[in-house]
Image (cartoon, rainbow, N blue to C red; front, side, top):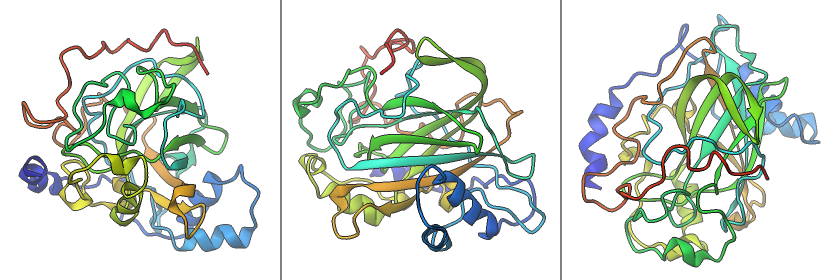
Length: 318
């Protein structure tokens, strides 16, 4: 964990950008939860109870302003041309995760950003990314090809969804594993102004680059289950991660709800509200130190034969 400790102090100095006064975990947190799960049939009482116990994400202050999410690096494992699709698993094994993200405009009283394209990507249960399957995840893990899935090694666990009128997108995926020296996380970008074309998303501009994080207690439970347990070694906790800034939901920490309270293998529902400035352009560089690139020569280095950024752009939609 030397790599993560070395950069922890620098990471902690990053302030969470806001557009107004101090954020409060008030009424907007409940509204964000309700809109994120609006496509499900549920009683109002159940929804409000869950929201009350959840930490705020893009929350409002008394003046109605929103929290602008902390922007961080895209990391070394990005590939252009991900497919527009709800289910990104491609048969990869792992604990199911239904992820619902709500995109809000921090400049317009937290108005939903309908039509925003939300892109996510993450590693599989053993720490491998599609397109970079020869990168060593650290510890002791089976070869990526041994998991028995039928996944395309350039497209699995990557995808776009287009936000509905409430600014909500939904993905079906798995909870990621870990790789040295990072904690459990999902990468995310928000684009606006483009359009779906040939199964992917083209044009427009990149507004936000960030990462989504998992509570240590939940990650620890998951990593004891198959197939995660086949990857042995020491994984990085949130406080030691080189990217997570300790900012809670505004720093990307997901709220997670188990599908079955006594059986974590049944999966989780996760949600977060992403507060963005739709007029801003983001280079993808963000803050943090590398977003996952370990010191030279350490496990997890991007291999020299990694595909180009357009490697998956010709893949067909599924």
